Image (cartoon, rainbow, N blue to C red; front, side):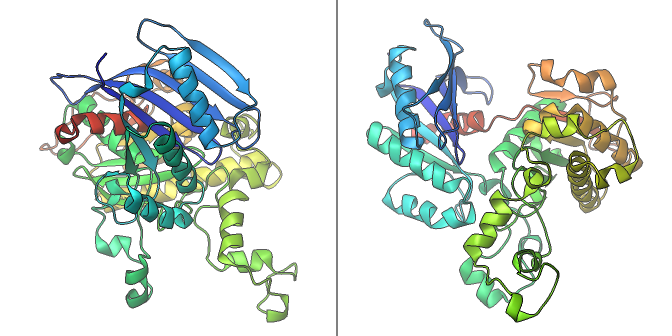
Length: 442
């Protein structure tokens, strides 16, 4: 059998998503891999872990979902997957040529990088800037090197997509003689998702990426927005770390920097009296804002579907948020999304080809899409088609149009049609396909 397999891994703090692809030897387009199987492990740090494993092509059909007591960290999670790969799917692990790892923070890396001792240590150094993800990715990288020593691991960084952001947008209004050497600037994240969305929307609208202006909303447990001008990132809501910008399941999003000191003081009120100060260190502050905030802190759940269901959205009275924490979380998220959509619309001078929803919430929440669409009609966006919006989950296409207009974009015409789209983003595919397209690796 040919050694042409590419494994794509996406590590969360207590989860691991795994996709296996086979490289096509010849292809007439930019799609160079075929899906073989998908797998996932969740609750890794709180056993029993939940394990799924499903083949999508090949001679052996496997579809299993089970709880596994033996998995208690990312290393044992990956080992369990490898056992199933050989014992259940009948695939020889030696056929895996490359393992692509999603690494959230890549600092100033401009390209994906083969993992060696030097790059491993650099990623380890950056873990403090993405504490929910980089550490988990390193654990899996270490497990891959141990279990598959002859297979090359490649780090794909979410930050690479945002490298074109202009310096005045990436910079902070602080002393640059200090900020520069420390790398204190906007990096941006969800770049693999944005790269997938840009390519998919380009194919859908039959326009070259460099002709497109998009506002993309990657909405999930971690959420961000991105303005894309002529196929390149112009601005994005996340900053030095994924903490800035939109709130998430457990992240606060953008707040007044001084809030954390008042939040933790012992006075029970806002005060500058040093006797009440709690002397909060950066580790505690980041723990509060990364893991103990977001809509879980408002509602007790990280499930945005549950929040939407209990938010009394059929009642337009905004005062409901004062008594219903689910409505408060929903309205707060909607408000912050609109802040970025409006800002990016202005930065793109109103020349926007599409507003694109992606991510778990972006792809599933019909209510949130409807409310955003209603608000942006004043900017000239097409109205939402209720039936198309309701049936997004049924579509097998990468991109679904949920607004009422056509699909042709005439960028040389008098005006761009401002469509509203949903993209079923796939970060694992983006990594594996990029790896397969790079002829130098083969």
